[in-house]
Length: 144
Image: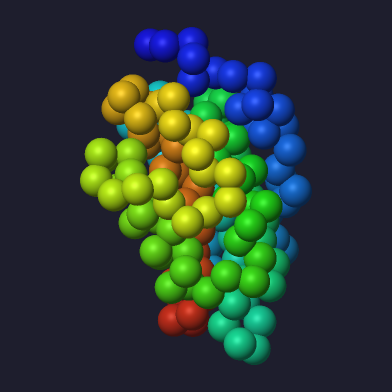
C-alpha cells in the first residue's frame, strides 16, 4: 500500500468532523461497514420542511480514510437533498472505479492518490453510502 494516500491533509481532515455525535432523534439512520478493514460509519439525518438535510450526526469507528471521508461528507451535507447525496455517492463510486470524472463534492479530490488502491475504496465510500441511505430513509419516513 502506498503511503502517498496518508498525507498530512488527510490526517488533518480525519480529525475535523463537525458532527461527531449521533442525533438523539434522527429521521433516518444508516450504518455501513467495510469488510476489508472493519471500519464502521453510522450517519443520522433530520430533514427540514423542504426535504433537505437540516441536521447530521455520526459515529465513526473507522480507519484514517474512513474518518477523513466522514468529515468531508459532514462538512458539506447540510442543505443537500436525498437525491443530491445519492448522486454524490454514485459519482464517488464511479470515480473510484475508474469511470467518470472527479465527483461534484467540495474537496473530494483529496482522495486522488487512492484511486489505484482499490482495497481502500470501501473505506472512502462508507460515509457517502450511509448518508445517502439515511437521507432516503428519512425522506420515506423509515428511521432505520
